[in-house]
Length: 453
Image (cartoon, rainbow, N blue to C red; front, side, top):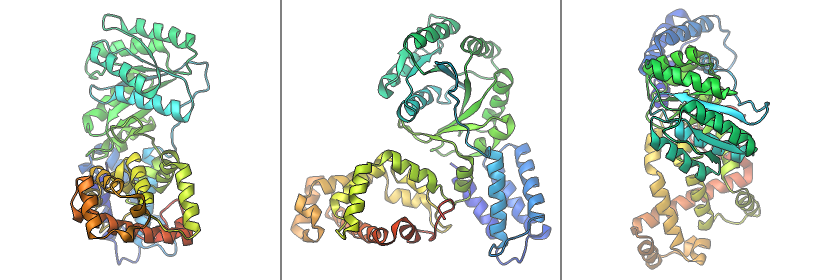
């Protein structure tokens, strides 16, 4: 998401290179490019107008600090306005209420509500140690009830049975009673997808809300849905007291305009963002970090948090001690790193959080190291003996042939892996000598990313 917008904004601010200061004359064309970039990203026209006016007013009255070029100063202003438009602060769910705390999900058909219900349940179970119950009141799509029941089993949540022959309001009342008897901390209510122009369906969800009396009413919106989804969010907000928004499919080819528009149009905070098909692919939405991603600054803070949560702490500490003692980074260590990369969503998920210079194409990097290729590399290492993994330099031509055959790969693939290992070994030596700061200096773009200086 935001790839095209990021590129266009970078091109627009680069046009200010060589200018001495920000003036109305030299930012006119830049702001026109920013405006076009936002419109191409499907940002709502009223939001674009307000956004551009705020940037122009701030830019002309901005006192550029020492060491900042006009382009950098404008980026700073755009970043601040993006943070403002995205909500300034992260919106956290409130649990200060008599359990069960009820969370109701609403939205259009196909927005991903059922999957989001399961992802949210997993997050609450794993990170907040809550006892969660799921219930579906989607009597219009019987498969939705079965889908939620299956997902509840996968994430370890309780499930309240429902049937397509029941009235949604009765299902909610029964689910509340069952959640209390089961001592559930949270009850997540998955509702049917409905068009905002369908009066009967909108009346039904109002009745469900009245019966459930949810503490949180989240509007689930598809990041790729475009302007109509933003209009729908406005109508839902008029009929229901929405407390927050969940963006789904943010890992796809979404232009990103929905994220920028829906917060400004409804005034409701974006709470979560679905970033993949895996059941744990749900991130808290941080406006400041997302603004940095949009401007190509990366999001290292989120990456660090993911590493802490998904990477084996014991293995990481063991590797750190090994490197400090001056011992080499062997192929078993590389296999562990590759496996951890897969668990973090692959190279695509990592790259979008790293600050990359304008001449580096993230898509090209993703192509060179997609998840399938990573798994093949792990298979090659698994075909080696323990001694070969420990001492890669002992791997000669005949050994490469045997390893390649065992992994079902070509000798060239083995050679590429060994070359990659050498590069990783050099990087790890830098990290052992100078820590994370020294390591990041050697990464594309150089220097410390924003938030870690």
